Length: 76
View 1 (cartoon, rainbow, N blue to C red):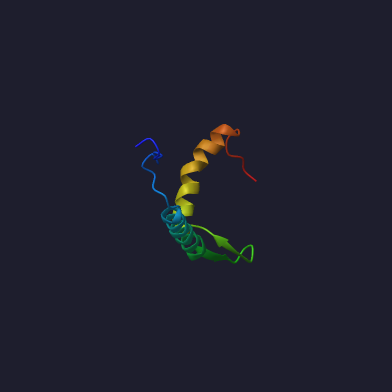
View 2: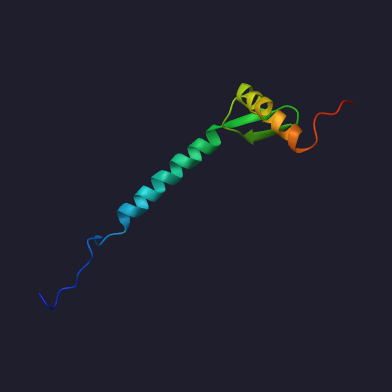
C-alpha cells in the first residue's frame, strides 16, 4: 500500500492518445485535400469548402452591410 504509486487513473500507455491523434490528423488531411477546386480566373487550385452558389449568396448577403460601412454604393 505505501510502496505503490497512484497513477491518477490516466493509464500507463500513451499509445491510445497517439492513435486518436493520428486518426484525427488523417481525417483532417482528407477533408482538406478533398475540397480542392480549380479557379480559372486565378489559374490556381484552391481549398474551398463551399459551392460557387454558396459563395455568391454570401457575397450578396454581405454587400448591403459593406456598402453601409464604407459609404454606400458608387457608380462607375
